[in-house]
Image 1 (tube, helix red, strand yellow):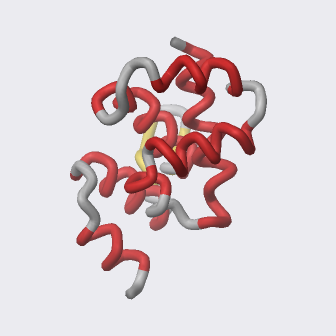
Image 2 (cartoon, rainbow, N blue to C red):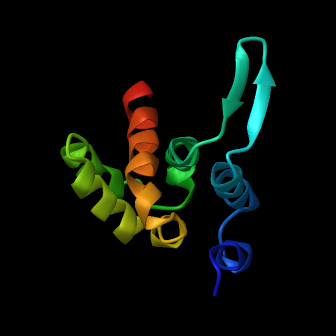
Image 3 (cartoon, rainbow, N blue to C red):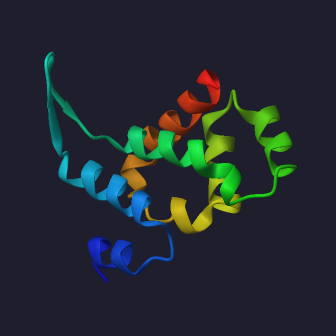
Length: 107
C-alpha cells in the first residue's frame, strides 16, 4: 500500500494526517518574511503538544529520563505512540523526533 493511502486509512486524528501531508508535499505558507515550508519536525512538534491525549501521564516519566538521547526517544515514540510514528517515513523520522523534542524543551 502506498504511503498516502496508509495515512488516509490510519486511525489517527485528522490534524496529524494533515501535518504529515503538508510535510510530504512541503506545502508553503506565505509570510511577510517569505514562504515558510511545513516539515516533519512540525508534525513531531504537534504530536508532542497533543501526546498527553494519547498516552498515560506516568508514561512521560520515562520520557523525561531519556530526552537527551534522540534514538531512545524514537524508541519511546515507536512503543507509546506507534500508530502515529509508524506513519512517518523512515528517512524523515530524525526530523520528526527533533520537532517532538523541541516542543518538550520549550514547555
